[in-house]
Image 1 (cartoon, helix red, strand yellow):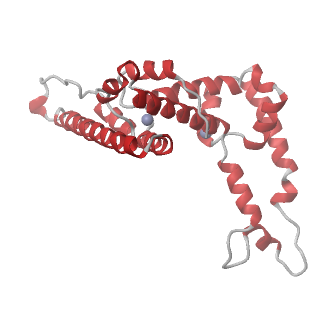
Image 2 (cartoon, rainbow, N blue to C red):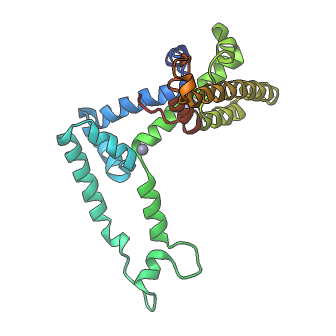
Image 3 (cartoon, rainbow, N blue to C red):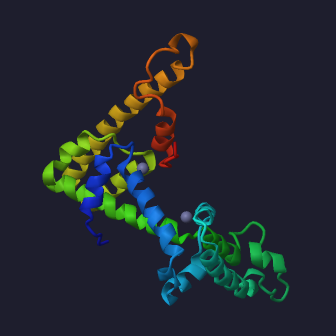
Length: 245
Ligand SMILES: [Zn+2]
Ligand SMILES: [Zn+2]
């Protein structure tokens, strides 16, 4: 697959020195897409067709609600609802000779799931914003592998001194490396990421340990050091989800 290089945002993300530069980029992309789908550009016919079919996951519908753009949200959910309504016959398929209506929906007992349920489930799981974020992260993991390969502007040492990645993005990065790097490069990259993660998971563990110790009365007057928000950062490291604090 062909990917686009996007170096500047990636450099900026590494400068932030967060627990995961890809989470930082994901958050920025998510904000951009939330605005996009509530803006005028989302009203163009092609986007509307996509939007009517796919819609958003519960998390992103929730975030769209928080953006407080009720008119736009009303318009896009209106046509999305119409699309589901037009699908009603497919959702409630008519029976054929001797087949129970319900089994056409769910599949006969002991068989694979019915055709309708499969289609419906995959439609429910679709989300335009999740899809676009995934493609964005692919571009950035591609860029990171590319910069590492060429060692452009000292990227290897920047990567080595970074705080590593969250677990989901660690996987995305390794997957990209296996797709685009040569076998020997893959092995070097794999070791580098492993060492980086090992060092930073240990750091976080120590920070979280001090965080828990701080609640003991005898440590009341001791400084927090880097530990005051360790619990937030650990959650991000484990889940890839940045939590505001
Ligand atoms: Zn991440
Ligand atoms: Zn989503």
